[in-house]
Length: 218
Image (cartoon, rainbow, N blue to C red; front, top):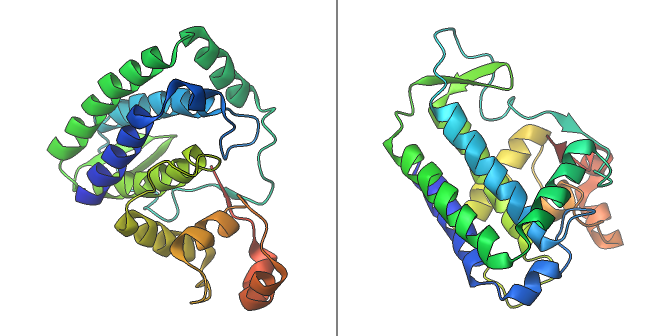
């Protein structure tokens, strides 16, 4: 729960600190500018709020690992929902409006997560899981999108180290295999999810794991 809050606060702070010109830079998500990614984060925050007030009475069907739908084809940016984020972001017209909406809805999502009971079961995407597991999935979500946000912004603030470490551990559970110790947490996440291609040396170090990559999470 605490790491969810820290990862989310760090990501929102990174957005708040961006100069307006950076909103027109490409993000680490194919087909999205930084402004499009920020719009997606607003939608993510709304999803958190909705899920936390959607209790379930049945037994969990997934946990923090099996929650993810895993593919191996990186997004092209042509998916209708991806295109919708682009149109919505353009409608804001000014970065300050995106910043305001993210701070407004994002702060509410952060407060709701702090107040939530991790043992309570919630429903989302036609699945049931505990609130604790649900919020754990978002540590990975926030960390990956923080890396997407700063992909072409070398002066922007990095994600928290503990969020990177936890996200790497989560990705290793999803892959059912550990990344080489020579990989930093950041590189494990970027290479593991197809956000960048491995170097020849990295591919050799990955061994059999290379055949499983990328792990495209949805």
